Length: 240
Image (cartoon, rainbow, N blue to C red; front, side, top):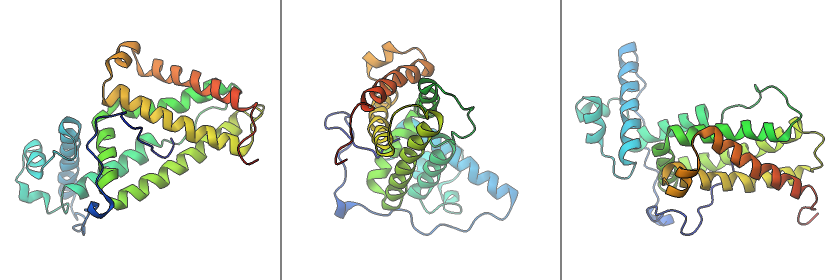
């Protein structure tokens, strides 16, 4: 995954807030629950929040929506979270850790660059296809909450470095330097992000019609990855 770059006209998203209007909306968190029942209630609230985010998104969501979804009184939420930003922040951080940035080291080594790229793509495709509402929320929350924005950019850089190193480890015979591999990871990661947003979040009808399964999407993107890699291997990186 590459650092996110939103293409002009690519999505009818809500206009980004100006820097002065940005806010770190996650205020001081309540103390962690001390009982099993408290932890279960806290998880129940998070699960309800995920369903609401998938349905209506972060900016339209109210605490009353979460309470209604969970079947509790709104006042109960403040025993566990400082507000909707606190809830959303925790959910999205878990999403980054658990799904989108799944460790690739457990995959069996392969000498086939194409197979390696397909499997790496499946991590991102799976997350977009299963949780499109959370991926839209990630975009909006990144624009509004400073602490999360900084974390997301750091993880984005780490993802690109991981992919570049994975290409080197799995495909040692491919004639690419370190800088070239990193450029490929950044450029193609950004391309994949925008493509998957169009397909699973915006539900572009042309793309929806073209692909019958997430596996087909991962395979298609790998064709673009491998083609770009072969092309780049014949080109010197800028300033080299």
